[in-house]
Image (cartoon, rainbow, N blue to C red; front, side, top):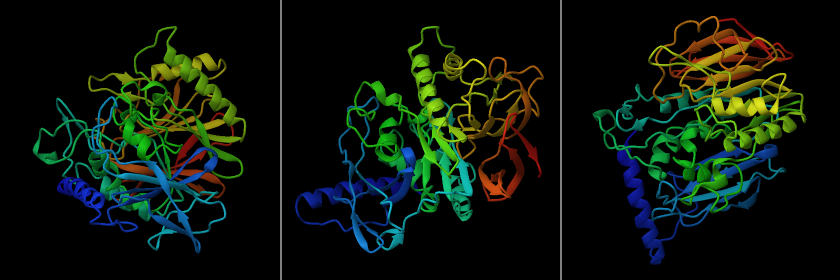
Amino acid sequence: MSFKFGWNLHIKTLLLSALACLGLWQAPLAYADDSSYVVMGPEGVAVIRVITIAISCPTLMADDHALAMHVRAAPLNTPSAGIHPAVFPVLSCEVNWPVSAKSITLQGKPLPKVNPYPKKILLMGDSGCRMKAPAEFQACNDAHAWPLAELARNAAAEKPDLVIHVGDYHYRESPCLMDGCAGSPYGYGWDTWQADVFEPLRPLMQAAPFVAVRGNHESCSRAGEGWFRFLDPRPFIAGHACDVSVAGDADYTAPYAVPVGATQQLIVFDSSSASEKSPTADSPQVATYAAQFATVAALARNKPNNWLLFHHPILGFGHGKLGEWQKGNASLIAALQQSHSAKLFPEGVQLTIQGHIHTFELSSTRGNEPLTLLTGFGGSSLESHFPEQPPENFEPAPGVAIVQQQSDQEFGYSVLQQVNGHWQLREVDVHGTTKHVFDLQLKQAPYSFLQIK
């Protein structure tokens, strides 16, 4: 993709805004540059979003009736008062999908409708192009080194009913110091969100509704302000959206559930600020997360089948550059240990889906813990190849041993699909070719999987 496009759009936005203020130009209903998509919120409410350079929100058509959108967040053409001041010269618009509406269009183009019984769910994560000083730079201008655009096209061709992104959308934090990313925008404003997310993911965002999980790159100390403007499914509240110098409660948002059938739901957990360091006994963060896991337990009692979505692995694991095996997130493990005694995760959770470690990984453990799936191989710089198996005595969390595991450090995405009444998992490469297929046993503990390809 061309990063000159991002800068040209920014200049065009400022020029059109100035002309509009002088009364010399009036915004049309929508632009080709606008981004339209649907995010799933608490209780399965579908929120339609449009990000536009126009001076007013567009009008949608719900069946044969006009549907007005309202302003979620106004443009910000001067740096904000956030922890990392950023500019957002675009209008964020939204409206909930009316329950009775069968079809909604923007300028005659249909928006992706929610399937209340999704049979094919596409999973991805950790997708932005890494640019971080002093030495972590990815060749964003090279479609092979950063293949998100191709991945999104092939993922959209799967015609999924739903897309789950497990976080870390935004990675362009520092000025480029190598030829491969020359000319790229950087920082935390709209230009980087457009380059890392809305331009490359456009085909997939137009194909199916998104369940958006917040990653550590979207914490208030990083790209959190854009997260609340664009992807958080709940109402935008100024002062609680990483838009002030003190993050406060914006770094911790409450878990919520998205129904995906009569007996199943996704529970979305915000782990964006979870510290990797071993916490103290009186850690306020651990207490906060323990209370939120209690909310997860309460939500899980509402339906018999639950998949828990969050960014940081708890029973997932990595392999470091120095040859060490990396365990699950210490703060989240401590919070779960406060909440439960017999097992880490609440009853009714059969599968956890997360990212953070840039790999595909599927594992099961001894006992009644859920299956663990990592799908953090969506475009950002990958982990080095793991050895085939972790050590025999390796425990990602205290007292939890790995029984089965499969991992792969190549770019791609995952697909969960119902086949003959059960869920099957496919690992797919960036070109859309299925690499591995697994039958998941999620009906009762101990949960397991069988590789069939």
